[in-house]
Amino acid sequence: MAEAAADPKEYGKLAKEYRRLDGMVRAFDRWLNLEKDLREHREIIEGGNKYDRELVELAREELPGMEEAAGKLEEELKLMLVPPDPNDERDIVVEIRAGTGGEEAGLFAGDLYRMYRRYAEVMGWKVDVLSSSPSDLGGFKEIIFSVNGEGVYSRLKYESGVHRVQRVPQTEASGRIHTSAATVAVMPEAEEVEVAIRPEDLRIDVYRSTGHGGQSVNTTDSAVRVTHIPTGLVVTCQDEKSQLKNKVKALKVLRARLYDTAMREQESKEAAMRRQMVSTGDRSAKIRTYNFPQGRITDHRIKMTVYQLEAVMDGKLGEFVEALRLAASAERLAKVEA
Image (cartoon, rainbow, N blue to C red; front, side, top):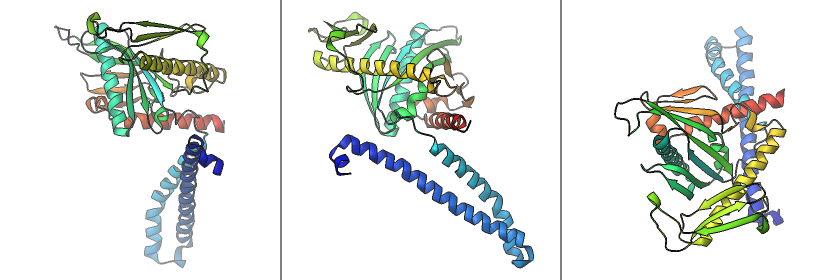
């Protein structure tokens, strides 16, 4: 234990595992107490004339609610016994790219970024923009950002996929509803020891960063383009005025992409998370539709619809997050029991 206490990282891992197990023990104790109360109520009901009449009636009234509570607690316990995703406590790198729909898709990409940023604020997480490419009307062709905090990946990993929007674009004079899309990729952040990047596998180019409409925003060659030669992955960062800071951010994104690719390849072999309905995060799949005229959001994986579009776009994403987590846990439990 002394060795773990001397290592902050190891101590943090043990503390999180302790909290998880402590929650499981507390839930089990509540279940034991409920089962004891259920047995006593059933004995009173079955005893009939041995007990006071009012006591028997009271036991009959309380029994259904207690049975329902015990059943729910039992299901919660089963879900707790499902091994957690080892990446759940990781920080993340999120990439949002405008898809079909031109400028409207770029505006929607900006809306999604603001939705996640506000949700992160509610959760007490830190958001740091790593790279961005603004569109002409104030949206984003692409934006990449990190989110740091407790349990970030566990809550946002189901956001990977194609998000579709239906609304009247700002540029539409006739009032017709258009359908556009943006792609979201949520990747667990990787540490240097987990993804070894050899210097000889990198080609690093520096150039002068540009702003909106191609306007120069920097008089020095501070923008960085990093190419990972073995995979062909390319990451560019120009948001910082420092070439070094841009390089650090680019390598952070590259490391997350490489880790995400390796993770998905492994999960594919094991027929694991990303091929399941809820937790697939398949970026070719339409996962959610945002219908502005009707104020409706539908998540197609769990067939969940809410009519609180403005609230959700303002960061109140918790209802979807928890529903997706519960559905994914239930599916993992079914596979464990099969």
